Image 1 (cartoon, rainbow, N blue to C red):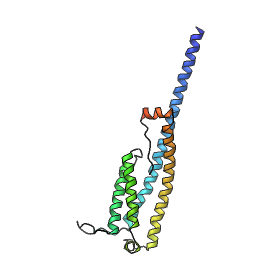
Image 2 (image 1 turned 30 degrees about the vertical axis):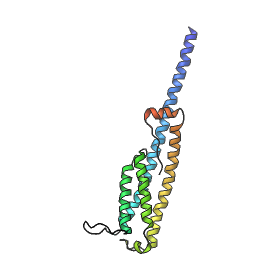
Image 3 (image 1 turned 135 degrees about the vertical axis):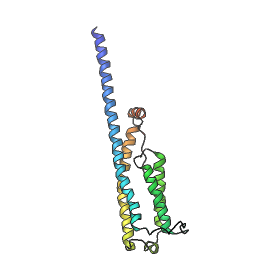
Image 4 (image 1 turned 180 degrees about the horizontal axis):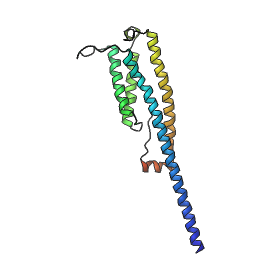
Length: 184
């Protein structure tokens, strides 16, 4: 009889240990996922500053329904900014959606390329009338702040993705639908 109770106590202890481990591992995954969401939200806020820069400085588009002139750098930058803003809206709050994040990465590359085509003469036609050096400095400052937020996001994603891939937490991740996040 004593041996039967000993076996039950051992199995009960093992079950309790597994239960407490499971709860702890689940809570850790939730904490890491929440941290990724939080840092991604701050990254999105930084990325939105590109659209704010465009709203403040880009000259008005041609009047009416006239199509933009081919090769017009401001039109290209406006279009790239619109695409980037739409991709950012699609990815907001979804760093686990690989298609939305891939779209954001592509739109950001297009925005950066369109910015490179703004020469000093074209940039001088900015609506705000600020000197070219100030406009470039402002854009670069936004880029620097985005890079800092991007590094913090990439570090959080790396820790989270590592936790999701580790055994035996990978079983909990699969069971509760924790997906890997994607960096920019």
